[in-house]
Amino acid sequence: DVVVALQNVSKQYAKGKPALVDVNLQMHKGDFLFITGPSGAGKSTLLKLLYGQERPTSGEVIVEGTPISQLRGNQLAKVRRRIGVVFQDYKLIPRRTVAENVAFVLWAQGYSRKEIHRRLWPTLKMVGLQDKSESFPHELSGGEQQRVSIARAVVGTPPLLLADEPTGNLDPDNALQVIKILKKLNSIGITVVVTTHNEQLVRVSNHPVVQIKDCHLRHVRK
Ligand code: ADP
Ligand code: ADP
Image (cartoon, rainbow, N blue to C red):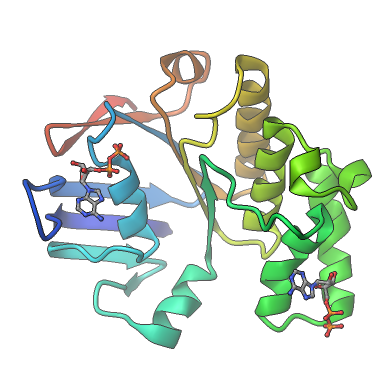
């Protein structure tokens, strides 16, 4: 049960040198993977390829058995609903409450009000924010904002969660808390990919690690 795979994927943006060359990667259900590498190495590019925000220059990306490199419009949107994404800068809607930020994805996908409420509370509880549901993003700490963005990413119960430098703006305590939540989600069966250049976080955990360097991916820890 391969959830997502990169097959001989190379990516070159219109201008400049290649970002990734001949990358192969397979994630099975329940895997947890750290992707490390220096700034500009291609970590974000790899995640963007996985959820179809960028197309490979050559090679193929397979999500749950579907080759996605040629998909567009509705077909691509359907695949992307199977993938939760978390960013370094949270990307919350400023004038919406925590509950609205998390509910919005479901609402936009046409879920009923009843189903939205059924999903909202357990998800907020899972990230420890049930008491902050009516707060606005600017009233929250960075760690809390990142936990809202994790709740938003998983409220639709995607099988795959991608987190791009999720701890990049957080102090060590909040960073660890975010990683703990990602591990908890992984333990209930969600496949998780996390990019980071925080060596400490990688060291204190026992999950597999790959490194991107000079456009190539290599396994650092199995
Ligand atoms: P990382 O996430 O490891 O910091 P990125 O994937 O963001 O690295 O970037 C990899 C390389 O691709 C860098 O050289 C970067 O400048 C380049 N790059 C990223 N996005 C674009 C883009 N939209 N257009 C052109 N070059 C880009
Ligand atoms: P329904 O039509 O299914 O009853 P609602 O319009 O009542 O759905 O909205 C359901 C949930 O989505 C509510 O929690 C509401 O706050 C939230 N919501 C609705 N519209 C927006 C929006 N534009 N931005 C963010 N959240 C929204």
